[in-house]
Length: 158
Image (cartoon, rainbow, N blue to C red; front, side, top):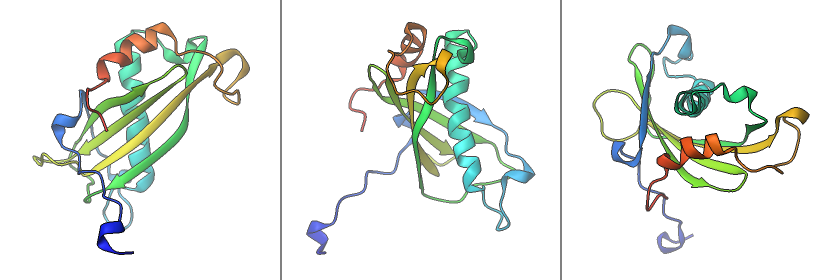
């Protein structure tokens, strides 16, 4: 494949790409045998960033709503190593709020760098809570969730 035919990578995310912030304390056990944050921990941080925002912004236990968001897709782009003992700042933005799903991006930052160490994509699909997480997305996003997530939308989001 020639250079002209190669797809371009999205730009490395920076702090100004995100709308809401929270900090997580790293733990000794978060690092793998090589002294880097374990891959599974990145996904735990993405889940925590999204759900902590929903709990705080709605003022309710989102687990008890008639419709709940289940994870339909996650991915991570890694840019540089991070790990214990420094805290991690998590930036959150919504790329899309649809009828039954929300697409988030979560940037992980450690230290003073303006560039993300990693960025996750996290898609939640809303299902009927009475019938369990195995249901297809057939219900709209609850109004209380939509109100909490709409301020996370950014014009020109990628």
